[in-house]
Image 1 (cartoon, rainbow, N blue to C red):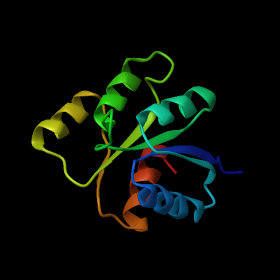
Image 2: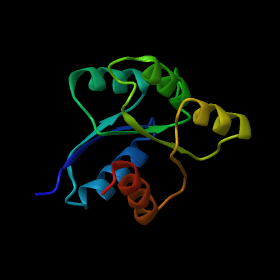
Image 3: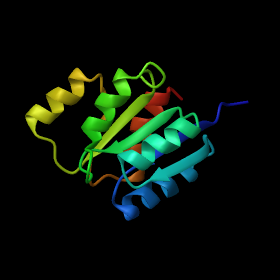
Image 4: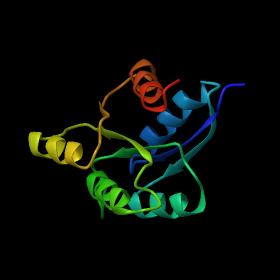
Length: 126
């Protein structure tokens, strides 16, 4: 029996969250896809559930995806959680900062289901 994965999607654009959820739900590899509208809600959900992967947008109000990842990586409890950063625009400095934080996977918007699933399957190794 193949392992089923749990994913947390954090993006302030509701349409993006829903599209990612639909794309992931189309695969039989996911048991749980949870959506959060910002970093604060994402952290609350992360404190209540375990996730195999967090998909987080770079640009969000209040706290950016990079700030969220930075706090996550400093945490003993969540420091090893796998992350996929999504963004419509990343500067060279932001990309270097993301790499410094240990982010190895970035997906540029707009993306299609195939590109998302390629990244996710690489990260989760399935």
